Length: 158
Image 1 (tube, rainbow, N blue to C red):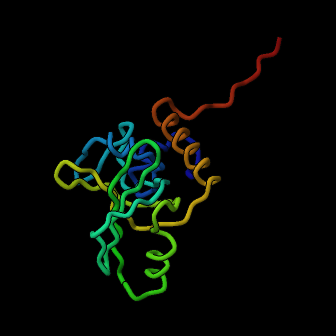
Image 2: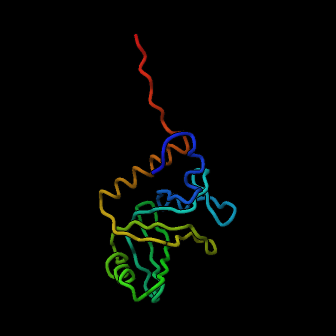
Image 3: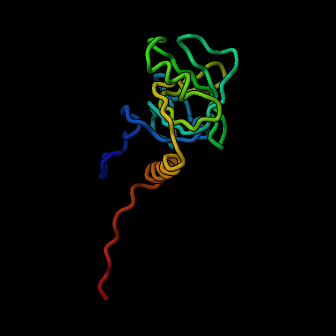
């Protein structure tokens, strides 16, 4: 998370990770330099938690393509693997990116034709607690961007 204060204007356009839903990805507006805007703010990287649905026939040794479904929609994801023989790659393919597994992906938004997708840089196992926290993060970031960060109210003396 970020610190409080008035310097939050570029919070999610500065390389930090913005928690989002698939519906927010679908509604993201194109911005300059192959970037996107959500809630009027430029987004460079996103975090989504959802269930994996593998796309049959689209796997290679160095690329795993799958759909991620989070209850608001589904988005195509591509995870490029630098070293297909590594222990990390084996764990990714055998333990993390398996059908119906709840995972958190972190990546960048991409557009191919008329289809929005996520180029995944990291995929991690998630659980119900992380999903709840993720949804709360989405709500908090959306409200703080669209309505401002709430300030503590002073109690008035009577």
